[in-house]
Amino acid sequence: MQVEDGEDERRLVREAQDGSGAAMARLYSLHWRGAYRAAYLVVHDAAAAEDIAQDAFLAAVDALDRFDRRRPFRPWLHRIVVNRALDWARREALRRRVDGAESVFEPLPPPRDIGGELMAALKELPPEQRAVVALRHLLEYTPGEIARMLELPRGTVNSRLRRGLDRLRETAKAESLAEERR
Amino acid sequence: MRNEALDRALHEAPIPVPPDAEERGRRMVEAAYAERKSGSELWGAMAPRTSEGRRRQPLPRLALALGIATLLAALLLSPAGAAVRDWVGDVVETPAPKPEPELAHIPGGGRLLVQSAAGPWVVQPDGSRRLLGDYEEATWSPRGLFVAVAKGRTLSAVEPGGNPHWSLTAEHRVRDPRWSPWSPSCCRIAYRSGEELWVVAGDGTGDRLLSRSSAPVAPAWSPLGDAGLAYVSRGGALRIVNSESGEEFPIGLAGANVSELEWGDGGSTILEASPGALRLQKLRASKFEARPRGGTRLELPLPPGATVVGAALAPERATVAAVVTHWREHGTTSEVLVYAPGAEKPRSLLTVPYSLGEVVWSPDGRRLLVAWPGANQWLFLPVGRGKPRAVANISRAFSPGEHAASFPRIEDWCCR
Image 1: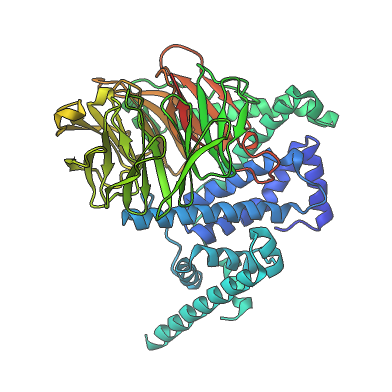
Image 2: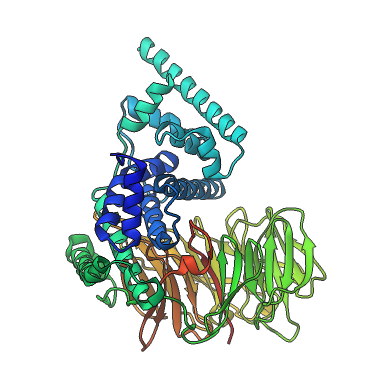
């Protein structure tokens, strides 16, 4: 569910700043799903994605008094989500490299259908590419907005996006071929 | 794959969502929001600007209290909760204490070293704090006169006020600097660089290689102030090396995936913590000069299904404090456990919803400081008698002026 327009979202932020629990609850309802999904697409671990989405909202509550009402809430929240998801994914990758071990938490596998194949292909991308693919194609930010959000040069965002999409297309092509042979 | 197909797939592909995840998050956010409003009232200038906020304030707090009580009751009454309740020696069935809005002083005194995204902070006993600089890691000297800090390939010693004393540049990134305990011949700093273990004198002289094979685990100094340094090799062996002579003493195989190593209990015990286990490695000679050898290994019992998040050995005792997390379908909970020497079961000091972070002992061994990132709080927990205390708004305190404040890591609590 999307907020009708930016004005509505600004109003909710203003009311939440002024002490309206209902407005805060509405902001949560509007954005939790997107936040969780974005986190999951980067970390591919349901428990971690839940923690990341929750942590991002807690950070939002913590910073609510200082939040500039002229700025949109959604990209600000997504910036926290994606940065935390990237931190988690990097730590996890490092831990696995160091330990040579699987995660102590068994992630719930995605269902094996077309979406499941895509998820499996997405999981093979480096976390940085996953993050820009999710921001561009799930959350629908422009490369310029992603660059500002992740504090990256725009060229870096474009190249990560291109590489990520190329690899996803290769996987999709290979899957189609395999399907035809079956 | 066309971009439109990818857009649609990313929006619509089924992804696993833990049961009630959204509702659990909502409860936490409501609680944090209610807490924010009560904090605002304590800070008169930031009080809610509408009468609605003031009028509604008690209701969310009541809802919060009821919510937490219900959640804990549900957890403890569920079959899995019952198993945990039966398993631990003593469960404190009270929720976390009501948090104070800021750190006005450090309970029990001492100074803290806290690592934030901006760098390490020194927190004085009165709660005042100072950012040392944009360093990546920091550790106290034994009397708290200096702090060893690392950034990239550089290791430096600085005063708690920030004045630098010396620096050295290693070949690889410097990790896990650890200052040895005080002794008449004080002191040394051990650190990892790449896969190597190095040691340098406290005045920055005599930098030298101790081992070419060190696992990514912080080394642990002998608590006696002698030259002994315990570390885990890349092959997974627990070893003690004489940091003066370079002589090595194999102790035994370390457990799998060890993440923390501590040497305490008068030099007779090394604690190994990993996500799945807590082990105490007894040494046959506590004095390092007497050629330490591995003795018995004791595995501390963990609650069924619990994952160790952090652990610490009490100063001068074999008491172990541990933070464990229970990941369950109906919600994550975390618990602070204390293992007294010889006790059959640990004592549970506190159980809270969601993940707790690291745990550190106070210098006098009477309190624990536990990070609670999910609630943006620190918990000061007396191990004996006394009142637990919680302090809120930790991220903001260590990320002034930042919109997306991150939760800092407690590095160390200094000094006796």
